[in-house]
Length: 75
Image (cartoon, rainbow, N blue to C red; front, side, top):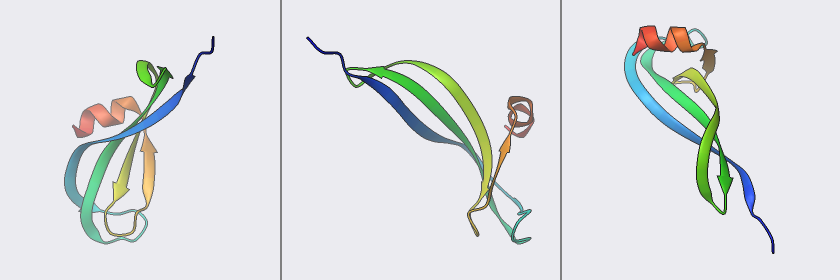
């Protein structure tokens, strides 16, 4: 008998809005993304054990991690 378990990371785009990038200083779309790490058993996700949020620029690809409180104010 064997057990297959692992971790899967999923990216979800929560919102897209125009804004100025802090890296390239261009006015471009800024994506608010959620990165969720999930524990899987036999390739079935059981529970999420970590959520991280980031804002990324569609022009240069630069990204900044933000807190949950900052995410709530942007959504």
